Amino acid sequence: MKIIPELLLFVIVPFLLNSGNGIETSTHSINNRTPEKQPYRTSYHFQPRQNWMNDPNGPMYYKGVYHLFYQHNPEAATFGDRIVWGHSVSYDLINWIHLNNAIEPSGPYDNNSCWSGSATIIPGKEQPVILYTGIDDKKHQVQNLAMPRNLSDPFLREWIKHPQNPVMSPPSGVEVNNFRDPSTAWQGKDGKWRVVIGAQNGDEGKTILYQSEDFVNWKVDPNPFYASDNTGVCECPDFFPVNISGSKNGVDTSVQNPSVRHVLKISYLRKQHDYYFLGKYVSDQENFIPDVRFTGTSSDLRYDYGKFYASKSFFDYAKNRRILWGWVNESDSTQDDIEKGWAGLQSIPRQVWLDKSGKRLVQWPIEEVEKLRDKHISIMGEKLVYGSNLEVSGITASQADVEVLFELPELQSAEFLDPDGVDPQLLCSQEDASRSGIIGPFGLLALASKDLKEHTAIFFKIYRAPNRYVGLMCNDQRRS
Image (cartoon, rainbow, N blue to C red; front, side):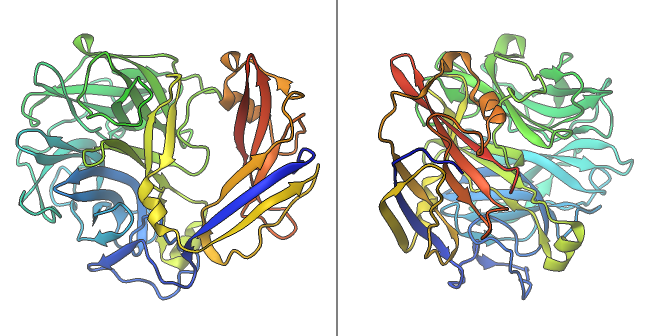
């Protein structure tokens, strides 16, 4: 990586988890067996003790406990024909207690798997309910309702299914095998509940709106909530409000007033990425008007540029924030997954809020992650010259958190850039870590091999804008 002359570098590396300290994602497990050899297992990302996991489902905070459900094959480290809802709980979103499966196939409406869905807490009753997709006896996708058996149990160990299941079946104009993943519900001013479901008709992807007064009897809206051509099925829709003030504080999913904008997230199966749209929710017309529609280009807004899919957010009442989970589906072969005995993990939970510009979302790891920090090493005042690389040695942790401060000698020579006329995502797609600029690229090579043939570059470039300077931060995964 090329570095500008006389760049001063200050690095602090707090050790998150030492490779030999035995800390696991969960502190306790019920009915799970840990394989004896797991050399590639993570230490602070959430994952079950063994076997397959994919989408995060129904995250919520209830009676002092955080809940995370997830798509799980309890029998193998591969996706299967009998997917269940795994269930774990935590007091801090870091240390997890694995419980028995929450929802398993048991009736004609879900005999062939219990697929993704969401949780909603009904106010007043303070009752959590779950809407999930069942694969029925005909291999059609239908929506089902489940409730806790015992509301006094903060762990919500047992769930029962509603006798009227399925509560929603594929409407006309929707493919019966592409109708899935109900969102968290929100309540309108009329007291009715709304939920959106991902669907497909031909080559058109769509999210469909349903309404209900009692969470059992649902009516479909005749018009798509959002539709996009040539995308295929819309999976795992997530719809929520964000403060327009730039505050990091989250808001309840049902909030509708002039102080918020709305986010619609869609996981496009063909793209294998999560895209989000900022826009206006016109509640009296049951319509979402995005600022910019999906284009299929690099200008579309994405949550993440790595392995990240089927994300799900929830409002954390305890700390007044919105938290985002996402499935990290890795790149291992099926045979590798079988040999190691597990597949899939969840991203580090992130707090998410609207940028002050109102044009995009900001994400940051939740503050609880910092409690994992232990020892640290530091490099202070190192001077880097053009084209040089400095190895940060002495890191013995299997995972580490890196904080870097770069001091630049001058900025006046920076290239001119008008940030109002440039999409930073598009600019990052055009740049790479080896393309020289006047000030930059400079940054980090993470997970680098000794010969640097394999690495992930996280780099910066500095530009001169009217009356200020702006920084561009990108990552280059071509050698990852």
